[in-house]
Length: 343
Image 1 (tube, rainbow, N blue to C red):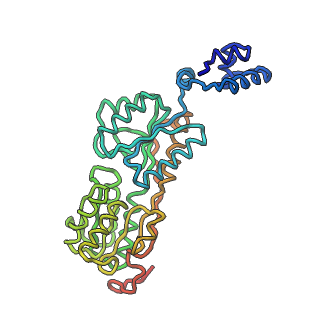
Image 2: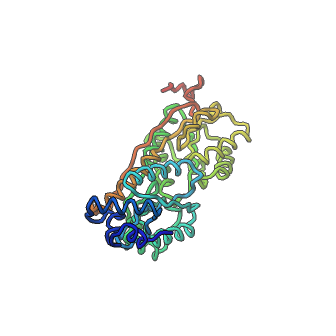
Image 3: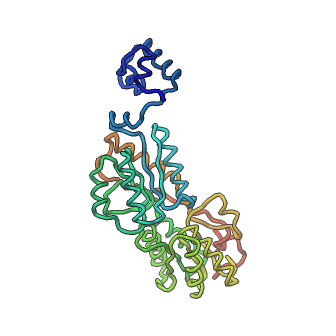
């Protein structure tokens, strides 16, 4: 493999001149630049990016840590991150935490050791060790939190409106006459769970519906937990259910099938998260659509702004969701509870 010294000898110039051309770090005359470029092509020279990054103290890489790449919501965020990063000449190193703080810590330490220029993090449930938190806050690589807030880290944060999305979903069910509305939540110590549960409670309170703890069942944002939670919740005989993520919705639909309960004729349903195939379910799912791509895209914009010195104080931005109305909430059915009109 050719070295920078081989290129310099082939082109008849100094090593410093080759370095200046390869790194575009200083002026080189067009004639010398042409010689160096020809030598690089002839020798198939590949610059040592590690050495270059040490010299300029920048690696042009960003780290991204997500809970589960198999979940299309998180892959949507990653796509937004990658697209925006590439526009500014950055590559992205991504990893899965599997919602495990131990794995998250190992990945974050690895990204710091790789000297990435910044880190985008969807926090795993649970507390971060004090030593890692301090290391992240003191590192040259800034952190932007996406989707989930984590106040102890004091990092820039981009969120979807969990409170507002849940409130709108539950108010929609109330508008159609439902008063016994169940909810399947995620892990209680995750910010998305807290926001969605708060939106659910607010919608009930605003409509003078007493909060019933028996109608709140905890899952873990996966299909099996959605099934188990659904089996428990359906025993409480809700007339409508709000499931706070799409994987648990799949499990809940399995519970409905097992118990022989029809949706929406017997139980209305609103899900969280909306994807291109959601409208292919039977019934077609009413869902709160989150701006996954925009979360990732905006997160990188904030991170790059911080690197350029545009932002000094912590920024917390909240992006809007959209309620997509289809069939599972009962709107398309002729039967209405208490004669509530379709909207």
